[in-house]
Length: 608
Image 1: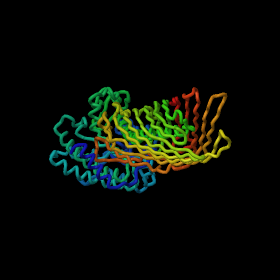
Image 2 (image 1 turned 180 degrees about the vertical axis):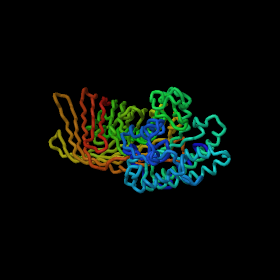
Image 3 (image 1 turned 135 degrees about the horizontal axis):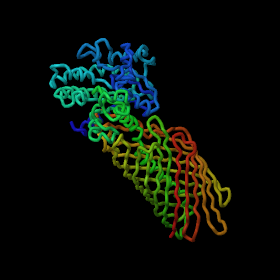
Image 4 (image 1 turned 30 degrees about the vertical axis):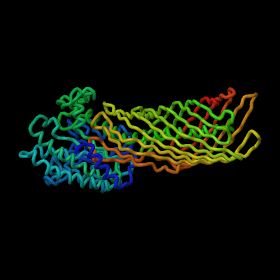
């Protein structure tokens, strides 16, 4: 089945239900299960054996493994239940460990966690916290055992692999039911290991691993459908990329080192595989950990394109609202006007459960035509801006351009002022993020709609100053087209079309004045309001790794606090000639829980 068909089929099935969605993308604890690719020395503790000289740290790299890299990268704690040699279960052989029938395997690890740990393992609460990451590497020893057993065939691999899938699923189900909602699963291929690479038996191991890896995606997809974030890393794709250019990863060889690398980190760091020809070196595991880090962080960057589109729509609405506020009393002799503006908008997005921090800003130009004979005013506005989101670590960015067109207008009589706006926008966005080596890139389009209405009443304090209540309701919606990244095939994502929306109500006080200072006419206004978001729940964004299209993850984007915050808006029109005015307008939020926004415009207006 093609990638597109697989992705669309899985997406259609996922659309049938909308379960709870994982709420964190940055782990605070890594809980590891599986075989020697995660083991931190447990198998030696269980067998009451000292760490052998070839594995002086208890890790089978002679140094560190990818769980250690994740621990360091995220500043997370590590809880390790992995056991070297662990089999997924006894279904094929009646044993649980490839090294010895006396040693336990994956099912024992899971049972130990659910029992609160202890013994060779740390004592734990047998539940996963929302910010825990479950790291799993399992199935490789089952594949090796079959591969290296005399008489094993490619034809028989599928049947044996299906049993291993069932064993692994039993343990994974128990961990999912214990609350695991962020899962990193390492899928290897024993046919690629140096111990068999180039030998006929490698085809047997490849057949087993390929069948197992395809089968294990079924329960992983089920967990994703149930609200977990599942990161499936295809180690064969990673290995192929490394073999194509080892130097790009800081390696001299994608093969195995000799005995000279044992307890010699400088030599070991030059190779992908360790001297045992089965495990990766510390450098190789570090590469795997960096791949996982990129996968785990990726969902936290997916909301930026829709934020840029939605923020552009809201900013354009505020520009039109500012035009309404600066409409003035009008001139029946010169009711038409042209205006040209420079516009800007910015806000900072902070780290949250589902978003990583970035700075948003947009600058551009706007203009239009207005009609204001007095009492009634209307206008048409257009704008072109260059929105940008730059992530905190400068390892991801969204850039593009946006065009908006809108209409606005209202009337004013006996102190009552009513106004409204309606806008439409299009954006073209380039989405890029750093991979481990290769950059990942995509292009997507955005569409936005916006509308707002405002009512105010001015009590005349004099013939030049009025003060009164004001209320505003503004709605905006943005839709981002689906896109697929290009770049490293082990990391690229396919992101589905999604939309976000906002509805903000505000109420407060507005003051307007008409000042004649030495013949210079100035018309300022100041508005102070309290505002609240009424549609802060966000929406589900669905995505899948192109390497595992049936595992469709979901994450919430566009979430906003519904707490009350402040808004300040001010502007002024300065007459610099009989029919020429300079105008300036700005607005800012105060104590907004998610992020404070700042923006405004400055320009010229020519009446005729």
